[in-house]
Image 1 (cartoon, rainbow, N blue to C red):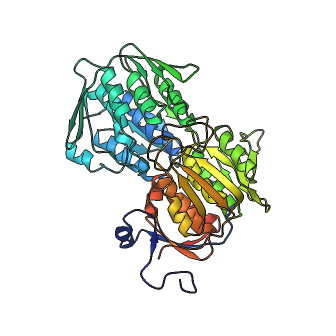
Image 2: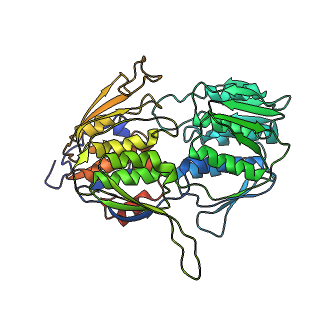
Image 3: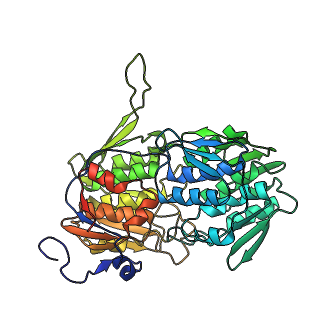
Length: 474
């Protein structure tokens, strides 16, 4: 490294993803670390709900209106796919408002759909709505973050039980429903969020009653159910992860403001903790972040919840928020396991692990949702962290990866002094973690592949600037 913290020769990359290819692009952010993040930023509608709400608009025979839509790449991908299928999408009067008119849904050209192949995993959720509207559907090869296979077997098996005929071809998957779609009883072997969404979007207009057992019940799932109910669906959420859907012959439109993005809110909270900063996240809600807040406080972080208040008596209203800050005292090690809701989100662990590198003692993280989500720790170790990964289950209970050859547990020894590095982003959440590490480290880092962060974090560079971070495009 030179005196300015930048490499004076060919960079040596930390990361596991096509470093040379990325290095030859302009997709790089220079991060001058060591400055605490301070200020306010705002989160909009949850990435994991907004794209599914957009797909749900296909089911209606009237226009739908969605508010607080973030400007992220996943939204652009779904907007493009809906447009290919004849949905007219316009911007509403309010910033972040989209209006969907599905009056002229039609088949899309296979080649045009394939343009989106590899850019998102959302297309698989088009199956049920398109089978209802057109009687057939085509799904291209699916992309997404490289954190494990995330097979679509659950999706396809569910569609078959509804009566769909699945034809796998080299260019993608063709589906038809010769006798229509009919209600069924389906038990998920694992409470998969995507498969639960698939069943919901298919069952609402399938003839008869569908019973889904071992369903995911994340806040984004419940919000999707609220949207479908607004459209005219009949959905009962029972205890013990059982959802019952009574099919209806038609659905109308909806008008909906989605829950805020709890993943982005937690990411900025972790950034505040790792950089010894103070960040207020406008729009963040306590109820959906309770598990995260407990861990945040247990490691020594401080937070304050401000409840939203509507305008009253001529006085201005107050937008709800959560302020997160490092109190200046020593952080404590902790042990946690990721799990489906109401457990600790898998998308929360990567940003938080960066903060745990600054905690005194041994922290243990047991990843039980995705089997290959700890690869990003290699880059953190090259920045000075002390993280060991193991194939054993280091949590309280064995998980489905325990007897397989996956390094899915981590032990983080701290505190560690992080130093600047050349980083290559492997996936969305690991990418934000690498960014946090660069912000917390001494010196100047170059982070390659940062455009991948745009998949889930709206205007993250502008938000960094608002928080006083010293970042720039070379």
